[in-house]
Image (tube, rainbow, N blue to C red; front, top):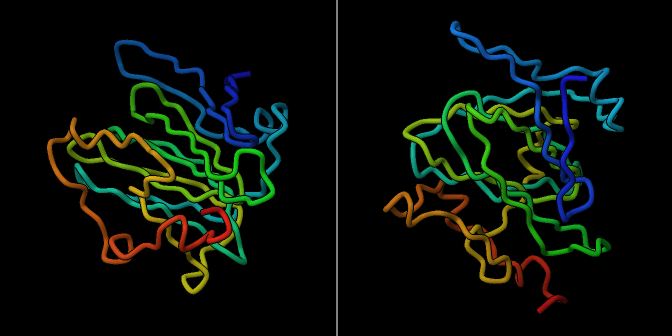
Amino acid sequence: MNLQLHRTAIQGVVILQPRVFRDARGFFLESYSDRDFRALGIQNHWVQDNHSRSQKGTLRGLHFQVEHPQAKLCRVTRGRVLDVAVDIRPESPTFGQHVAVELNDENGYMLLVPRGMAHGFLVLSDEVDFLYKCDEFYFPSDQGELRFDDPHLNIAWPLAELNMAPILSPKDEAAPSWSELFPSTR
């Protein structure tokens, strides 16, 4: 098998580490093998691939779909990001908690974000190519947002490392807070 699975504190959020073969020419890795994923118990049916290119300081997220939740398999092919998954499943014992992991073109790590998560990333390098598979189609009218810097979440975004304010879309700037989305958890 060319893939190692590392569990996180949130059920279903796992870090996948592919085996990377390096030599003087560069490297080779299998970024996806259905056989290896199934052997690890990951049986998502991927229906859509997405590719995002962003500049340093761009923060995309935290996003989710309400009626059509998506699992995502995220990786970086160029550059570095801090990738974050927030558990927004009210019935989950880790509701409101998050996992943050650096994905980059050197470590080759992939983050599996299960359904029921808000997801986002911050670009740490000059530019990044961020690729992700989804197990549900994107429905623009179904997208929800969660404020990236909400104090309830206490996410340690490395903005000081970047020495700049994050670059946000208008939608992400106006994202609701945790208490607006989940008023019963105040």
